[in-house]
Length: 594
Image (cartoon, rainbow, N blue to C red):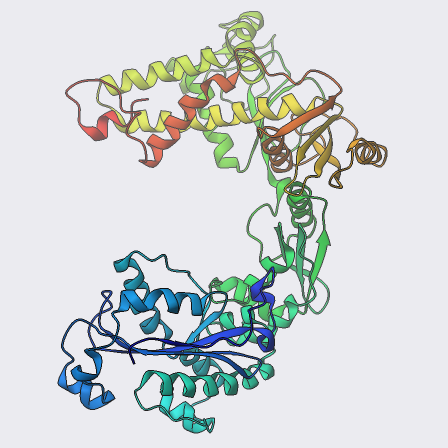
C-alpha cells in the first residue's frame, strides 16, 4: 500500500477531565505495529494498523506498509509474510507520521504490550522532529493480567485472549488484523472491568497498574467526594479517625490512595481498616492545612506520624530567683520569667541549653541558692565553668548583668553576644585541631539559634490582636484570613468579579474570639502559626488591616538566618561553602568551621 488509508466517522468529543470520562464514551485508537525485530531507534517499522472506535462502533481505520530503509530478516518474513519486495514502494516512516499523529489526536492509544509499540513511535517522532503528543495509553496485556485469572487463560498473549473473547478477527502477525483482534479483546475486557467497579478511563488506567487487592476492594471509598480544597478523614467502623490529610482537591487526592503510586505499608493497612472517608470542605488551602493540624492534634490518628502531639513540646525557662538557672518545663508561666522555645523534644532543649552554658556563665546546678547561706561549690566552679554563686563569689547584681540579662537579651532581642562567644570557641577548637569538639559546639549553636529565630518570628505575629490579609486565588476571587494572636480565627473566599469587602467583613464578624496568653504561641500550636506566617509572607499576599505594628527586633536573631542555614548545611554535609579559608587543613577539618 503506497498511501495510508484514513477514514474518520465523527469528531472526538473532549471533556475537561478526560480521566473522568466513561469508557463507553471514550474514543480509542487501537494500534499495532510490525517491525524488523530490532531496537526502537526511530526506524524498523514495517507496517502500521490502527482502528478508531467509540462505544463499540468503528469510526475509522488507518493501515499502511512502511519502508524501514533496511532489509527484513528472514525470520520476520516467515513470521509476518512481509517481504522486501512488498515494502520497496511503501512510504518511509517520516512520510507516514503526520497522518498517523493526526489520526491519534484526541484519542486514547490502546495496544497489546503497549510499551513496545509506543517506544517505536516515540523514537520515530524524536528522530524525525515530530513532537510526541503524549496520549493516554491503555495496555490490554496489563488489563488482562488484572482482570483475568490463570484458570481462565493460561497466558496473556494476544492470540490466547482473542480466542477467549471469541474475536471476529484472529491475530495473524499483520498490523491491521492484530489491531482488529485487539479491539475485540479491549471490548471484552471493558465488560469485565464493570465487576471491579471500573467505569471511567482514569479508573481503567489505574486498574492496569500493580494495585493491591485491598486498594481494588476499597476504591469505592473515593466515590462522591468533592473537587474542592479541604481535609479528608479516613474513619474506621467505630467512626474513629484512622488518618487525616489535606489537599487542594479532596477527590483527586483520595483517589490517589487507591493507585499503584501508593506503596506505603502503613497506608495499605489503614485502607484495609477504613469504612468511609469524610470530607471537610474549606475556603482555601490554608484553612485546610490548619484544620488538618487541629484534627490530628485532637484525635491522634494512629496512621498519622507528624503533628500528633503538639502538647509534648518543652521550653527552656530562666527561673525567677536571685541566681537564675535554666530549667526545662512543659508549660509556660505568666510570671515574667524568660522562656525559649518551643522545642519538639527534651534532647533538643538540652542541646540549646548546653549552648547557652558554653556562651554565658549561668549556673548549671538544680539547687535553690540562698543569698544568705553559702553552700559548697561543685566541680564546675573548680574548673572555671561556673562563677560559684553558691559560695557567694559573685553578687546577685553582677550575676544578673553578666549571665541572666544576656540570656534575656539574646532570646528577645540581639543574640549577638551568645553567637560571638560560641563562634569564638569553635574557632579556638578548630585552631587546635579539636574538630570533634568543634562539631559538638556547632550542633549546640544550631539548636540555640534555630529556637531563637523561630521564637522571635512567632512572637512578632502572636502579639498582634488581629491581622486581616488576602491574596488572589486562581479564578479571580480573594482568599481571606483573620488571624488573632497567631491563631486562624476565620477564613473565607470572595466570589470572582465581586468586591471582597462584604466577604471580609462577614469573616471578621463571625471570627473566633481568641484571648491573649503568655509566650510566643499563646493561642495555637507553633506549627499552625508557622503555616500562617508562610502564607502571610508570600509575595502576593496583601495585608488589609492590623491591630498594631508587625515588627521584629532590628538586630534580632533573624540576621543570623544565613549563618544558621550554612551551619545546618555543613552539619548535614550538603554545603561546602561553610568551609573557612583557613589554609593547610583537611576538608573534614575545615567543614567543622563556620
